Image (tube, rainbow, N blue to C red; front, side, top):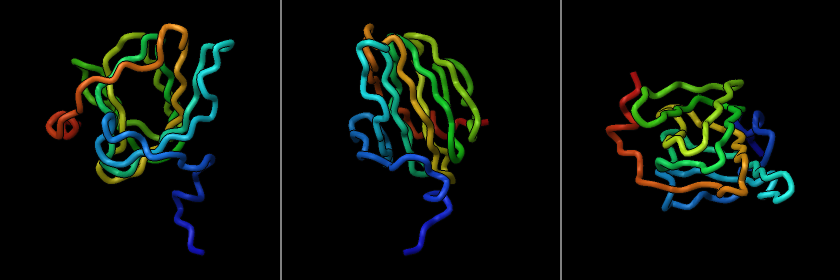
Length: 137
């Protein structure tokens, strides 16, 4: 069986297809630590196909992203898009409206850590438009 380089670099399996209501393009989520009420934390591995992204959203308790593979984008509302690559870490403060996903030409994988989950995990908002997504400088 032939294995692609991306599959060799993956630490965790892709998991389940993410809901189309909250993602443009295909993404997969593998929960590594389901929401733990003692630790108030949930941890998931998220794999985006090239060009895929999630909707604008907020996290009541904040979130940490740890990039493990590929190239992706991260944007907070009102700020420019940031390019992310393996080894980058993004600390997202509570209630900051943002989105993240793959660049047009690269798959993108990150570990998503939802913190302080006793306040809620995620509030999904509107889709990121193609115009917003393509606004990388």
